[in-house]
Amino acid sequence: MKRLLLLLAVFAAGLCHAQKDKKLSSDYEYKVGEPYKVIDADDKYYMSVDGKVIAIKIRKRDIFVQRFDVDKPSQISVKEYEDAFPKNAVYERMEIVKGKVMLFFTQWNGDDEIEQLFVQEIDVDKGEFKGEAKRILQVKGRVVGSGSGRMMDFNLTDKFPIYTSFDKSNFLVQYEKRLDKKDKQDDGYHEKYGLVAFDGDLNQLSAREVEMPYSKKQMDNLDFQLDNSGNVYVLNKVFEDDSHKEKKKKGDDVAPNYHIELFTLKPGSDQFKISKVESQQFFINQLVIYDGPKGEIVAAGFYNKNLAKGGFFSKGEYAGFDSRANCDGLVTFKMKPDGTFGDMRSYEIPVELLNQNESKKTIRKNAKKEEDGESAKFTDLHARGIEIQDDGSVIFLAEQYYVKVHTTAGGPNMPSRTYYTYHYNEILIAKLLANGTLGWMKKIPKQQVGTQGRGSMSFKHYEAGSDHFLVFFDNPDNVEIPADEVPKGYSDRKKGYLTAVRVADADGSTSRGSIINVKEADDFKLHQLSTNRIIKVNDNTFLMEAYKKGKEDVMVKVILK
Image 1 (cartoon, rainbow, N blue to C red):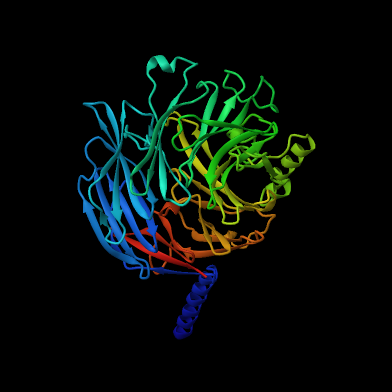
Image 2: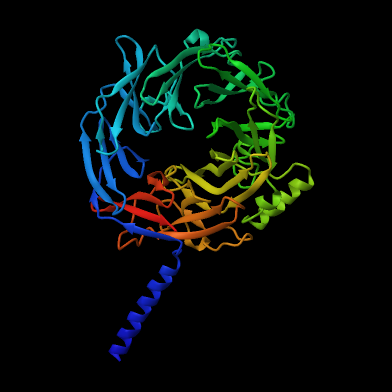
């Protein structure tokens, strides 16, 4: 009898393991490498060049450079640089230019009141610094920046936004001088921007400080871009009056009080060529500009037919948190050979697509909006990326994202408490053909929620051959989700599966598969997960670093079949 029970237990365990294995897709393979000592760091960045992978980790003023073997996958070497950042230095960003990994940082010279930008090149083959850091730019006086987002960290970063050309052969450094008190109060003040271009060897190609042609109350800068030929593009929202309001008058939800203009600055010129973009009286938001492999310049974003007020909640309960992040569809503008933008192309998001994987309540509300002529919208949609393909077509990526504020009721012995939840939900992916028509548009269902910022949420996009891959952490019950079912939720840093959605470039057809159970990966439980710790190596391979506890990290290799 005991032997029979033992056999039944073994059979049950094997059946359970088989069932778990069945949750993983056969379209993917993964391999967990040998553990190595964890590096506790404030910031971690992963770079891949020609199939070689390194990680740069920053802990206050110390910098660590790790080199990895992609095949095993395992750590090959680690190099520590103590006090690599000088005093008053602040990390800016990592970029790959001309096949070189470059770490940018700033340093304030208080004695001479000069803001400085430095570059430290990192040798990918050796996993170490290459030479000394080089100062490439000095600006007299303070420049505008933004907070780091860390508690008790009062340093400003993003002082020198960097825009690389499509072929990564050169890059543009942009800065804005901080206004003094007098200029801040002057509504007629014209803002001045520094635009400095460099090649991949850090040689300065051009340096100009240009004044905007409109006052600060008349315009908003939307985006900057540098093309392969050294032309600088500035995309702007220009208001029709000095009110700086998006609507022409109170209660007017259908007439924008602005238009879009493209400023072009040729090499050797200090004067902008200005091209007005016709927007068909739509409210345009989140407009960005990109250059393509053949020198194409494309601006893309969202449009909104009417600027209804946003509500405190989202997902159709009200009108979204931010009315400017609610959209009826996508827009694109393409620059013509004469340097002007062509007419706007618009691509409405069908209500049938909006209703996929939504609750019956949301579907009823969308139908009511359509009946009332208000139009149902994709609420809280944020652009995540645009890629111009070799044939001139455009891949547009967006994600529903919002933050909710929650306040608990207090009691006699317990004060009220306020906390935030961060929501990363559906992905919108669309292909816009080179001839201006819509190739396809898809909505990928997911619901991710957490309480500590982004964490392991959101997604990564990779293009591999004839397919696109959207990689994110998800609830495994969503693998075969039908279009009429609301997706099961994934809680940040909880049990979940690394998941991929394969989207065919030709027709947009999709397939969904689970790659790894992060709590049972080769007897390891993976922790400190983040899509930011995923790095593409080549068309069929990416790596993901995770913490396995015991003061050790592991590298996971995923192969896309």
